[in-house]
Length: 85
Image (cartoon, rainbow, N blue to C red):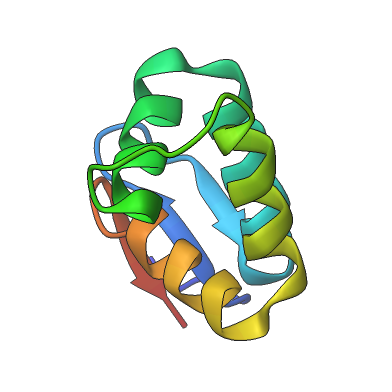
């Protein structure tokens, strides 16, 4: 099936996230899922989490820096999603 919009389709569920919503969706998912939150922190800090407010700091960084945002999206959607469009 050809999608009209570019985005990401989750393998096994068929959930489709349009590209313009991809960042917000990824942030929401890591905010509500403790396992994803931990994976995000390990990815962002490469295993060394430096401070108590590490999650908030990492979210701020990926929100403000376009290169970090791009890398974050690549990381988040690299597992169970297929890039469409």
